[in-house]
Image (cartoon, rainbow, N blue to C red; front, side, top):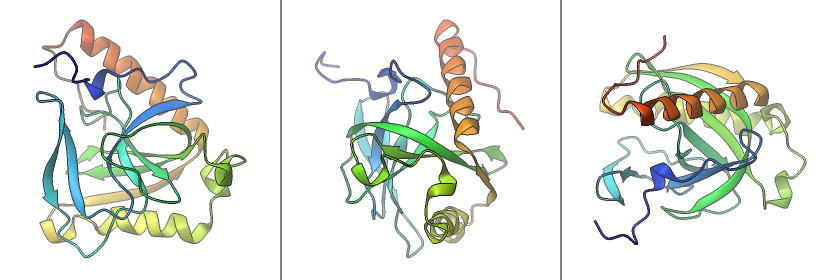
Length: 189
């Protein structure tokens, strides 16, 4: 692999983590194409199209140098005014977390706002977001895999402190995995 191709999975979470973190966008807001980062080729690959007639309610991606309960980097949804692009790195603030189960494994979504977005500069917790917007996000994640025949269970929203703790746990899991890469992460119930 050429040296100039960054491994987005290994980008730093950021020096101010967990209050301010770096995220990598895979799917822009309003997207229906499910792009995923290919850690072996270091490219963004089209995995599939959404089966349902819905679109992502924000920029969707992952927190680098983390491992979630499902063994993948921790997922994020960033509230934005307009879509960014696959591969965009953003500095964001976690404001909450949507607890979910996907195929029986924890698959939480950390809700974030961009540090450079003046519309969200005073938003510190998910409860400060319009309730209807939260309903739209919850509804999207509750149904977006229905037509694929995959079971997703949305448990509900947790606050910013819970989200920051989840980021810290996922960073620690990543560090442990780097020490012993052959060991598979053990999913938590």
